[in-house]
Image (tube, rainbow, N blue to C red):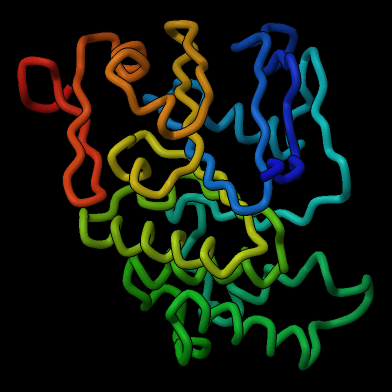
Length: 256
């Protein structure tokens, strides 16, 4: 089968801020149906790569290829959305329709129906009138994903969506993303500092740590090797697979 055409790609790109690149020669691409996980330590350059891929930051060199206009749904970290505002979950999700509402018009019945559909897709149907501040952490995260889906995106971009969650909540979000991909017509790019949280869902991995000059990208099979992961962690590791789950262990045992 021919590979699907890229929705967006960086080709030979230099990325960073100002005039000083964090990375040079970056080649990454994402197509419909892909789940790209950008993994690395905090402060390693993951969000910089995501912002460049999304066009928020222009590349300092090379090119960003965008074959056609691309609708993106963005999910920030939960702590970047202030829960003090007296908004309902439905009102938060309705923000995702801003791109689709003509200037000078208010959201209409079709927009509210799209929001209800998005909230149902992510498992928070019936919470539209609940104050956002009263939702659980998992419900808030699902509401933010519904907000992104309400924009009718082809690419869903998430920045550390499971940060601060317990293992059960983290797996719940990852299962949801896997389900959304199975529905078709969507690509996912996600930033995470925890490889084991994303390895069971991703089709592509990008390892990022600018402090060690590391940026490696490839398919899941190519990247989930002891050699590639040892470069990411800076020490010898081994990969353990159990019932579809992946764990990365230090060569002598325990966590790397």
